[in-house]
Image 1 (cartoon, rainbow, N blue to C red):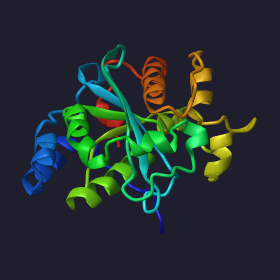
Image 2: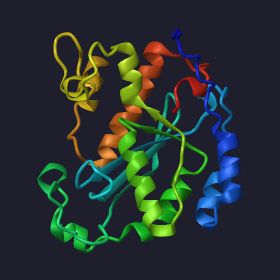
Image 3: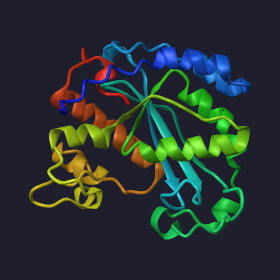
Length: 240
């Protein structure tokens, strides 16, 4: 007889990072893991967030590459522009980017940009101590993990709040088809970043620019917290 599955306990990223810091052989990665001090039941009002967005040559981390990284730090109700960054990244093998017409990064841009090896140390310092906020965070997780594994032979793990997943809680899936959910229809609103922002009255931004999309994601997250959560919401109810 089958019953309902038991609720999973909240992810304890502080404990997980302590173990990863002990196991890591890379000094930069070890320092990144050691810097995290956010316990699962910490209220979101006491958490530092980093909205993160990647532009890539496709959706498959096994064959596609990161070509741009953008991020901006924020709290649950305030955005800080002082440390915002947008980096163009040169892929290891083929700098020709088939998606350049979408995100505006040309072959010339990629040829003159630093590689991921020159960027990782700065990215880890920016991410250290923060909970990442991303829209469909699977892209950020899988691409950064693959790039880090290729570079130093170790995975990169981090806690993330997925604004697309938060939006799906408000608009539950009525059929398990990602493409239909992404595009939206009258029975199931679109979960795309721009469409989700429209529902909160947020302004339209030009899409497919890493820093702009990171800013758009930070604003969406703040609107979602104000709409359905509160400053006292434990961060473990939001992160993955």
